Length: 255
Image 1 (cartoon, rainbow, N blue to C red):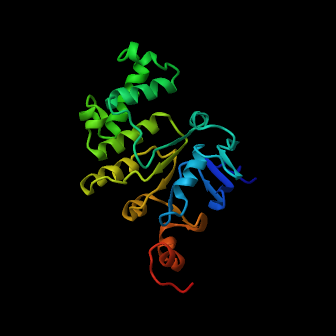
Image 2 (image 1 turned 30 degrees about the vertical axis):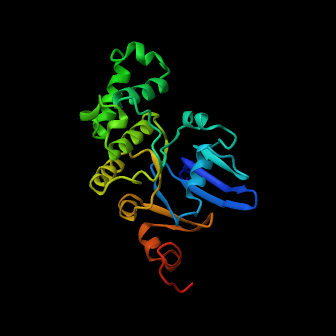
Image 3 (image 1 turned 60 degrees about the vertical axis):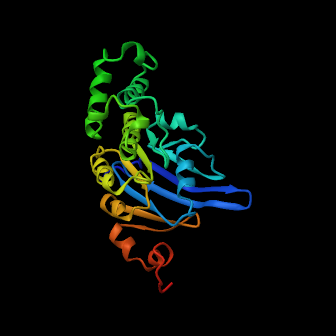
């Protein structure tokens, strides 16, 4: 008797987005298994962020479907997709600068658990919230900065806080849109360590230009060029593909 087919954590089927006469995403299909570590790479203007915006509900597709855990979420807004297990970070952080890490994470955890704005009235009195906040602060190296307003944190720490906030939603799928963008070289190791420490059961889709980070993290990759998937495969296969070297890395190729 054959084993049951595993339902993808995230799946895009024939996803397209047109802006007038411009096709930014063209018939893209993508499937992430639970626990996947998948990178999406491509040159500037390839349509990577448009694809992430389609997957998360920031944009509506012109054609195609999006499935989360086997459920069709194509018509659902972003907040409803978060409740179904799809979270993301952004190229530019979306933090509330006046809130500290403990306040930001506490609000996110409290909202997910149904306590909502009660967090402000009962802060420090809910063991379920407090223990999770402490775990996330420690996991992302933010314990020493727990009471500093987010706007005063070094940029790398702010990126870590954004990942912590996304993880506070307890996602089954986490989309990371250029988490190392703008992070000083000395702080990039912290980003890589944080990615390595993400829960094994969470499927990760990483969009990133830092190839050292990509190849250290990803187990599989897709290359997007002009809105279409050029190729998919293991990192070693992608690195050796002459089409990738020609189109993405800017080297001459055979075709």
